[in-house]
Image (tube, rainbow over all chains, first blue to last red; front, side):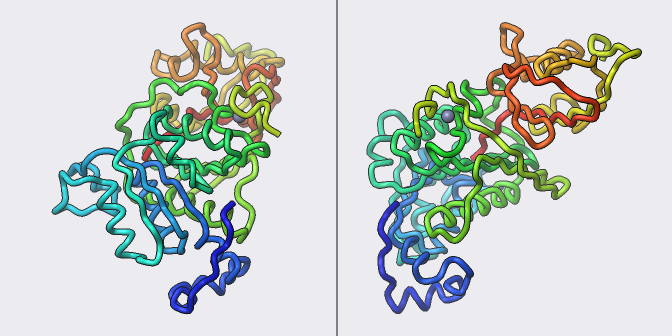
Length: 251
Length: 102
Ligand SMILES: [Zn+2]
Protein backbone atom coordinates (compact mmCIF):
# COMPACT_ATOMS: atom_id res chain seq x y z
CA UNK A 1 0.00 0.00 0.00
CA UNK A 2 1.18 3.55 -0.71
CA UNK A 3 2.95 5.58 1.93
CA UNK A 4 0.98 8.13 3.92
CA UNK A 5 1.47 11.74 2.84
CA UNK A 6 1.27 14.44 5.55
CA UNK A 7 -1.73 16.75 5.39
CA UNK A 8 -1.60 20.49 4.82
CA UNK A 9 -3.58 22.85 7.05
CA UNK A 10 -6.01 23.45 4.21
CA UNK A 11 -6.61 19.69 3.97
CA UNK A 12 -7.09 19.39 7.72
CA UNK A 13 -9.75 21.99 7.44
CA UNK A 14 -11.40 20.47 4.34
CA UNK A 15 -11.61 17.00 5.90
CA UNK A 16 -12.48 18.23 9.40
CA UNK A 17 -15.83 16.41 9.52
CA UNK A 18 -14.30 13.03 8.81
CA UNK A 19 -11.02 13.39 10.73
CA UNK A 20 -13.10 12.88 13.85
CA UNK A 21 -14.41 9.52 12.61
CA UNK A 22 -13.24 6.79 14.96
CA UNK A 23 -10.47 4.77 13.34
CA UNK A 24 -9.68 7.30 10.62
CA UNK A 25 -7.96 10.31 12.18
CA UNK A 26 -5.06 12.19 10.65
CA UNK A 27 -3.06 9.02 10.07
CA UNK A 28 -5.82 7.34 8.07
CA UNK A 29 -6.43 10.53 6.15
CA UNK A 30 -2.72 10.73 5.28
CA UNK A 31 -2.93 7.18 3.96
CA UNK A 32 -5.88 8.14 1.79
CA UNK A 33 -3.88 11.07 0.46
CA UNK A 34 -0.98 8.81 -0.48
CA UNK A 35 -3.11 6.22 -2.29
CA UNK A 36 -4.04 5.63 -5.92
CA UNK A 37 -7.26 3.84 -6.88
CA UNK A 38 -8.01 2.55 -10.36
CA UNK A 39 -11.76 2.77 -11.05
CA UNK A 40 -12.83 0.54 -13.92
CA UNK A 41 -15.76 2.42 -15.51
CA UNK A 42 -17.36 5.50 -14.10
CA UNK A 43 -20.98 4.68 -14.81
CA UNK A 44 -23.67 4.39 -12.16
CA UNK A 45 -21.62 2.27 -9.78
CA UNK A 46 -18.04 3.28 -10.55
CA UNK A 47 -18.92 6.96 -10.85
CA UNK A 48 -20.34 6.87 -7.35
CA UNK A 49 -17.30 4.99 -6.04
CA UNK A 50 -15.03 7.62 -7.63
CA UNK A 51 -17.11 10.52 -6.30
CA UNK A 52 -16.89 9.32 -2.70
CA UNK A 53 -13.21 8.52 -2.97
CA UNK A 54 -12.54 12.01 -4.33
CA UNK A 55 -14.67 13.60 -1.61
CA UNK A 56 -12.88 11.55 1.04
CA UNK A 57 -9.49 12.73 -0.20
CA UNK A 58 -7.97 9.68 -1.93
CA UNK A 59 -4.89 11.29 -3.47
CA UNK A 60 -5.06 9.92 -6.98
CA UNK A 61 -7.86 8.41 -9.03
CA UNK A 62 -7.46 6.76 -12.42
CA UNK A 63 -10.79 6.57 -14.22
CA UNK A 64 -10.96 4.13 -17.14
CA UNK A 65 -14.05 4.35 -19.30
CA UNK A 66 -14.39 4.42 -23.08
CA UNK A 67 -17.04 6.20 -25.07
CA UNK A 68 -19.20 9.27 -25.05
CA UNK A 69 -22.23 10.05 -22.92
CA UNK A 70 -25.61 8.91 -24.21
CA UNK A 71 -29.00 10.03 -23.04
CA UNK A 72 -29.83 6.60 -21.62
CA UNK A 73 -26.75 6.73 -19.33
CA UNK A 74 -28.27 9.57 -17.35
CA UNK A 75 -30.65 7.51 -15.21
CA UNK A 76 -27.62 6.44 -13.17
CA UNK A 77 -24.39 8.17 -14.29
CA UNK A 78 -24.64 11.21 -12.08
CA UNK A 79 -21.14 12.58 -12.69
CA UNK A 80 -22.33 13.47 -16.20
CA UNK A 81 -24.57 16.24 -17.44
CA UNK A 82 -27.35 16.42 -20.00
CA UNK A 83 -25.94 19.29 -22.06
CA UNK A 84 -22.80 17.18 -22.57
CA UNK A 85 -24.37 14.21 -24.31
CA UNK A 86 -21.91 13.07 -26.97
CA UNK A 87 -18.86 14.07 -24.93
CA UNK A 88 -16.34 11.66 -23.34
CA UNK A 89 -17.63 10.08 -20.13
CA UNK A 90 -14.17 9.68 -18.60
CA UNK A 91 -13.37 13.32 -19.22
CA UNK A 92 -16.70 14.57 -17.85
CA UNK A 93 -16.30 12.44 -14.75
CA UNK A 94 -12.74 13.65 -14.18
CA UNK A 95 -13.77 17.29 -14.55
CA UNK A 96 -16.67 16.88 -12.15
CA UNK A 97 -14.45 15.23 -9.55
CA UNK A 98 -11.79 17.87 -9.97
CA UNK A 99 -14.50 20.51 -9.28
CA UNK A 100 -15.61 18.59 -6.22
CA UNK A 101 -12.11 18.26 -4.84
CA UNK A 102 -9.22 20.05 -6.58
CA UNK A 103 -6.82 18.65 -3.97
CA UNK A 104 -6.94 15.17 -5.49
CA UNK A 105 -5.42 14.20 -8.82
CA UNK A 106 -7.82 12.67 -11.33
CA UNK A 107 -6.54 10.94 -14.44
CA UNK A 108 -9.06 10.27 -17.21
CA UNK A 109 -8.33 7.28 -19.42
CA UNK A 110 -10.75 7.33 -22.34
CA UNK A 111 -10.58 3.61 -22.79
CA UNK A 112 -11.89 0.54 -21.00
CA UNK A 113 -9.50 -1.74 -19.17
CA UNK A 114 -8.16 -4.35 -21.59
CA UNK A 115 -5.20 -6.65 -22.13
CA UNK A 116 -3.56 -3.76 -23.97
CA UNK A 117 -3.56 -1.21 -21.16
CA UNK A 118 -3.95 -3.14 -17.92
CA UNK A 119 -0.23 -3.40 -17.11
CA UNK A 120 0.17 0.35 -17.46
CA UNK A 121 -3.01 1.06 -15.46
CA UNK A 122 -2.21 -1.11 -12.46
CA UNK A 123 1.44 -0.05 -12.42
CA UNK A 124 0.88 2.78 -9.96
CA UNK A 125 -2.35 1.56 -8.40
CA UNK A 126 -2.90 0.52 -4.78
CA UNK A 127 -6.52 -0.67 -4.93
CA UNK A 128 -8.83 -1.56 -7.82
CA UNK A 129 -12.53 -0.72 -7.97
CA UNK A 130 -14.14 -3.26 -10.29
CA UNK A 131 -17.36 -1.76 -11.66
CA UNK A 132 -17.54 -2.83 -15.32
CA UNK A 133 -20.68 -4.20 -16.95
CA UNK A 134 -18.79 -7.11 -18.51
CA UNK A 135 -17.37 -10.13 -16.71
CA UNK A 136 -14.46 -10.34 -19.11
CA UNK A 137 -13.20 -7.00 -17.81
CA UNK A 138 -13.81 -7.94 -14.16
CA UNK A 139 -11.94 -11.24 -14.54
CA UNK A 140 -9.04 -9.44 -16.23
CA UNK A 141 -8.83 -6.98 -13.33
CA UNK A 142 -9.03 -9.89 -10.92
CA UNK A 143 -6.04 -11.60 -12.56
CA UNK A 144 -4.03 -8.37 -12.40
CA UNK A 145 -5.00 -7.82 -8.76
CA UNK A 146 -3.98 -11.34 -7.73
CA UNK A 147 -0.72 -11.18 -9.71
CA UNK A 148 0.21 -7.98 -7.87
CA UNK A 149 -1.31 -8.93 -4.51
CA UNK A 150 -3.47 -5.85 -4.79
CA UNK A 151 -6.88 -5.51 -3.11
CA UNK A 152 -9.86 -5.37 -5.44
CA UNK A 153 -13.39 -4.36 -4.52
CA UNK A 154 -16.03 -5.82 -6.82
CA UNK A 155 -19.34 -3.97 -7.02
CA UNK A 156 -22.25 -5.35 -9.01
CA UNK A 157 -25.96 -4.88 -9.48
CA UNK A 158 -29.02 -6.23 -11.20
CA UNK A 159 -32.44 -4.62 -11.07
CA UNK A 160 -32.99 -3.82 -7.37
CA UNK A 161 -30.28 -6.16 -6.11
CA UNK A 162 -26.61 -5.57 -5.52
CA UNK A 163 -23.59 -7.56 -4.46
CA UNK A 164 -20.27 -6.53 -3.08
CA UNK A 165 -17.17 -8.51 -2.38
CA UNK A 166 -13.55 -7.72 -1.58
CA UNK A 167 -10.61 -9.67 -2.91
CA UNK A 168 -7.54 -9.66 -0.71
CA UNK A 169 -5.19 -11.90 -2.73
CA UNK A 170 -3.80 -14.80 -0.74
CA UNK A 171 -6.39 -14.29 1.98
CA UNK A 172 -9.85 -14.31 0.46
CA UNK A 173 -11.63 -15.86 -2.49
CA UNK A 174 -10.83 -14.11 -5.75
CA UNK A 175 -13.44 -13.54 -8.45
CA UNK A 176 -12.30 -16.65 -10.33
CA UNK A 177 -12.87 -18.71 -7.16
CA UNK A 178 -16.48 -17.51 -7.29
CA UNK A 179 -17.06 -17.80 -11.03
CA UNK A 180 -14.25 -19.62 -12.83
CA UNK A 181 -15.99 -19.14 -16.17
CA UNK A 182 -17.88 -16.17 -17.48
CA UNK A 183 -21.51 -16.52 -16.46
CA UNK A 184 -23.71 -17.20 -19.43
CA UNK A 185 -26.81 -15.26 -20.28
CA UNK A 186 -25.64 -11.98 -18.82
CA UNK A 187 -26.94 -9.19 -21.01
CA UNK A 188 -24.94 -6.02 -21.52
CA UNK A 189 -28.12 -4.06 -20.86
CA UNK A 190 -29.88 -5.08 -17.69
CA UNK A 191 -32.65 -3.47 -15.66
CA UNK A 192 -31.44 -1.08 -12.96
CA UNK A 193 -32.31 2.11 -11.11
CA UNK A 194 -29.73 4.81 -10.48
CA UNK A 195 -30.35 4.78 -6.75
CA UNK A 196 -29.42 1.08 -6.68
CA UNK A 197 -26.18 1.75 -8.58
CA UNK A 198 -25.36 4.58 -6.19
CA UNK A 199 -26.08 2.47 -3.10
CA UNK A 200 -23.68 -0.23 -4.25
CA UNK A 201 -21.16 2.43 -5.29
CA UNK A 202 -21.24 4.05 -1.84
CA UNK A 203 -20.72 0.68 -0.17
CA UNK A 204 -17.80 -0.03 -2.52
CA UNK A 205 -16.21 3.34 -1.76
CA UNK A 206 -16.55 2.67 1.96
CA UNK A 207 -14.88 -0.69 1.55
CA UNK A 208 -11.94 0.92 -0.31
CA UNK A 209 -11.61 3.66 2.32
CA UNK A 210 -11.41 0.96 5.00
CA UNK A 211 -8.74 -0.96 3.09
CA UNK A 212 -6.55 2.10 2.52
CA UNK A 213 -6.99 3.94 5.80
CA UNK A 214 -7.26 0.99 8.16
CA UNK A 215 -10.45 2.56 9.50
CA UNK A 216 -11.94 -0.90 9.98
CA UNK A 217 -11.91 -4.40 8.51
CA UNK A 218 -13.20 -4.92 4.97
CA UNK A 219 -15.25 -7.99 4.00
CA UNK A 220 -13.19 -11.10 4.67
CA UNK A 221 -14.28 -14.08 2.56
CA UNK A 222 -17.77 -12.70 2.56
CA UNK A 223 -20.17 -11.38 0.00
CA UNK A 224 -22.73 -8.73 0.83
CA UNK A 225 -26.06 -9.34 -0.87
CA UNK A 226 -28.38 -6.35 -0.99
CA UNK A 227 -32.04 -6.79 -1.76
CA UNK A 228 -33.05 -3.17 -2.13
CA UNK A 229 -36.61 -4.01 -3.11
CA UNK A 230 -37.14 -5.14 0.48
CA UNK A 231 -34.21 -3.27 2.07
CA UNK A 232 -32.72 -6.56 3.23
CA UNK A 233 -28.95 -6.90 3.60
CA UNK A 234 -27.27 -10.24 4.10
CA UNK A 235 -23.67 -11.37 4.36
CA UNK A 236 -22.83 -14.85 3.11
CA UNK A 237 -19.56 -16.70 3.53
CA UNK A 238 -17.54 -17.52 0.47
CA UNK A 239 -14.31 -19.49 0.33
CA UNK A 240 -11.19 -19.85 -1.74
CA UNK A 241 -11.14 -22.60 -4.29
CA UNK A 242 -7.89 -24.47 -3.78
CA UNK A 243 -7.97 -25.42 -7.45
CA UNK A 244 -8.54 -21.82 -8.58
CA UNK A 245 -6.46 -21.23 -11.72
CA UNK A 246 -5.89 -17.60 -10.71
CA UNK A 247 -5.19 -17.60 -6.97
CA UNK A 248 -4.84 -21.29 -6.11
CA UNK A 249 -1.05 -20.98 -5.76
CA UNK A 250 -1.08 -17.67 -3.92
CA UNK A 251 -0.32 -17.74 -0.21
CA UNK B 1 -41.40 -30.68 -8.96
CA UNK B 2 -42.21 -34.23 -10.21
CA UNK B 3 -38.67 -35.54 -10.57
CA UNK B 4 -37.69 -34.37 -7.12
CA UNK B 5 -40.75 -35.47 -5.20
CA UNK B 6 -41.00 -38.81 -3.43
CA UNK B 7 -43.92 -38.03 -1.17
CA UNK B 8 -43.40 -40.91 1.27
CA UNK B 9 -39.88 -40.07 2.28
CA UNK B 10 -39.43 -36.51 1.10
CA UNK B 11 -37.74 -33.69 3.02
CA UNK B 12 -38.78 -30.10 2.74
CA UNK B 13 -36.24 -27.45 1.86
CA UNK B 14 -36.56 -23.90 0.58
CA UNK B 15 -34.88 -22.50 -2.52
CA UNK B 16 -34.22 -18.78 -2.80
CA UNK B 17 -33.58 -17.33 -6.23
CA UNK B 18 -31.63 -14.09 -6.57
CA UNK B 19 -31.03 -11.63 -9.40
CA UNK B 20 -31.43 -13.10 -12.90
CA UNK B 21 -32.58 -16.42 -11.49
CA UNK B 22 -35.39 -14.70 -9.62
CA UNK B 23 -36.55 -13.11 -12.85
CA UNK B 24 -36.29 -16.40 -14.72
CA UNK B 25 -38.07 -18.38 -11.97
CA UNK B 26 -40.74 -15.73 -11.61
CA UNK B 27 -40.45 -15.97 -7.82
CA UNK B 28 -38.01 -15.24 -5.04
CA UNK B 29 -38.49 -18.37 -2.98
CA UNK B 30 -40.19 -21.74 -3.25
CA UNK B 31 -40.60 -24.79 -1.06
CA UNK B 32 -39.24 -27.93 -2.63
CA UNK B 33 -39.54 -31.55 -1.56
CA UNK B 34 -36.46 -33.67 -2.16
CA UNK B 35 -35.38 -37.22 -1.42
CA UNK B 36 -33.26 -37.79 1.66
CA UNK B 37 -29.66 -37.98 0.46
CA UNK B 38 -30.30 -35.44 -2.28
CA UNK B 39 -27.10 -33.53 -3.02
CA UNK B 40 -26.90 -29.87 -3.87
CA UNK B 41 -25.94 -30.79 -7.45
CA UNK B 42 -28.97 -33.09 -7.74
CA UNK B 43 -31.22 -30.34 -6.45
CA UNK B 44 -29.92 -27.97 -9.14
CA UNK B 45 -30.43 -30.60 -11.85
CA UNK B 46 -33.90 -31.34 -10.53
CA UNK B 47 -34.89 -27.68 -10.57
CA UNK B 48 -33.66 -27.41 -14.15
CA UNK B 49 -35.57 -30.53 -15.19
CA UNK B 50 -38.81 -29.21 -13.76
CA UNK B 51 -38.57 -25.81 -15.31
CA UNK B 52 -40.24 -24.66 -18.53
CA UNK B 53 -36.85 -23.84 -20.05
CA UNK B 54 -36.05 -20.38 -18.71
CA UNK B 55 -34.05 -21.47 -15.65
CA UNK B 56 -32.17 -24.32 -17.27
CA UNK B 57 -29.53 -22.31 -19.18
CA UNK B 58 -28.78 -20.34 -16.02
CA UNK B 59 -28.47 -23.43 -13.83
CA UNK B 60 -26.77 -25.99 -16.08
CA UNK B 61 -23.95 -25.93 -18.60
CA UNK B 62 -24.40 -27.50 -22.05
CA UNK B 63 -23.19 -30.84 -20.61
CA UNK B 64 -25.99 -30.78 -18.05
CA UNK B 65 -23.76 -30.08 -15.04
CA UNK B 66 -24.48 -27.27 -12.58
CA UNK B 67 -22.98 -24.19 -14.18
CA UNK B 68 -19.48 -23.39 -12.86
CA UNK B 69 -20.47 -19.77 -12.33
CA UNK B 70 -23.59 -20.58 -10.32
CA UNK B 71 -23.17 -19.47 -6.71
CA UNK B 72 -24.83 -21.80 -4.23
CA UNK B 73 -25.30 -21.17 -0.53
CA UNK B 74 -26.77 -23.52 2.03
CA UNK B 75 -27.81 -21.22 4.81
CA UNK B 76 -25.09 -18.58 4.73
CA UNK B 77 -22.30 -20.92 3.60
CA UNK B 78 -21.08 -21.24 0.03
CA UNK B 79 -21.22 -24.77 -1.33
CA UNK B 80 -19.68 -25.87 -4.63
CA UNK B 81 -21.80 -28.24 -6.69
CA UNK B 82 -18.82 -30.58 -7.00
CA UNK B 83 -18.59 -30.94 -3.21
CA UNK B 84 -21.42 -33.49 -3.00
CA UNK B 85 -22.96 -31.72 -0.05
CA UNK B 86 -26.16 -33.48 1.05
CA UNK B 87 -29.21 -31.51 1.98
CA UNK B 88 -31.02 -31.71 5.28
CA UNK B 89 -34.65 -31.10 6.19
CA UNK B 90 -35.26 -27.37 6.54
CA UNK B 91 -32.17 -26.23 4.62
CA UNK B 92 -32.48 -22.91 2.84
CA UNK B 93 -30.57 -22.99 -0.42
CA UNK B 94 -29.78 -19.68 -2.13
CA UNK B 95 -28.96 -19.70 -5.83
CA UNK B 96 -27.32 -16.73 -7.46
CA UNK B 97 -25.84 -16.05 -10.84
CA UNK B 98 -23.08 -13.46 -10.52
CA UNK B 99 -23.96 -9.90 -11.40
CA UNK B 100 -21.86 -7.34 -13.18
CA UNK B 101 -23.36 -3.96 -13.77
CA UNK B 102 -21.71 -0.65 -14.14
ZN1 LIG C 1 -9.21 -17.59 -6.84
